Image (cartoon, rainbow, N blue to C red; front, side):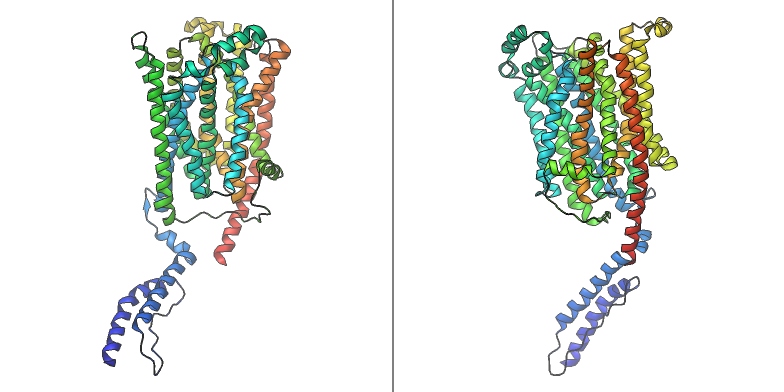
Length: 568
């Protein structure tokens, strides 16, 4: 009986020993021999077997944790890219595609709704951005900061995403068909007659409040879903070395969405133009476009779930800079105060605000020219669809170049290209308005009217500005978050991307309102707007140079901490 037990124990040890020997090749020596039972006690074969298995698993764990260099060297690759990196890059790219596909449809649709609405025009946009969009963004940041204190990352993502999907679906299928009942048209018309035309902007917001709610939700989709949810998630799971290589690639592949979504908008515009009289073609188009937005939103949620379920448990997690947190639960006011103490975060905020002001100084004037050229909503929407397609095409090409820029010149050079592009293209646009005589030979050669030329030049300015933003500015901004500690990442993005982004746009609107009030009209204030653009871009360039130095220092500190941990 004793010999049979010994034989059985020996065979079990032999079955387990090969696994232990494999683990021992790269790990501290772990005993794989069963301990004999003390004299007078029965031999426990099951406990011996369990001890051996646990020892083998422990050895394998040590291999993973202490021999990262050997593990990385043997990690499978695809097209020269580590499998763990590829497992993160592919779903993130698909998420970005779906998010930008939705955003392009929403961006084009919101402009058509508010600019062509009854009693409205491009003049409503500065009021919307200042008095509606900015308060909504601040309110969201406050809610987000509060929710982030007691919700996990996944729960917070779904809690923010699903209300957007529900609203856009409800707008097309419930709110827009009931617009005559929901909009206080007669009240606003009577009030406008009493107050005078100077109150046209605020009253247009009240008169078309569902359209304005859609406008704000579409703007928040860009600030919240793109900047906070997607980039926040990417920054949490990607290393800096991976970001430098693949962040431009995210945009390269995802900006194909601008081409497809722009053509989708153009296609629906053409469909409703062919409908017989009496049919609400715009309502049919809205249902189709928002249906695609809802499907895209659920795709984003599904990809996010799959990454957390199947990808993250099987890939190494990035290291973050350690920082003692004095207080984990902070309100929005405390968060802003906490973040304002850092020159690093202030420079990041300056970049975002400067972009918003700069692009807005040109955009509102350009959109007023579009409405004058295309007063019909069908034609306006079709032009915006083609504009989005052109933006996606140019951005795609710039994304290819951006990988070379990041690899050859680094973060600092890439960060100053966008403000330089905005300054140069803005100078051309303002020269067309301020020095029309200089363009007469060009207009005569092309056969264009001054109005159509202004529309085309403004479109080119926006295309190249947005293209450089998507291909260079956004990746630079997101890379700057990676070396920060976890709390600054989460609340820093909420404060910067959600508040500073609309603050920049509202800042540009306030500048325009002040200029119009001071000089009497937008045309009379155009030379001064050009001067403001110059000052803002110079501040932008200075902040980018300062942030470049801090980013490099923080990255070196993070690498040093990672090296210390690996040797500990």
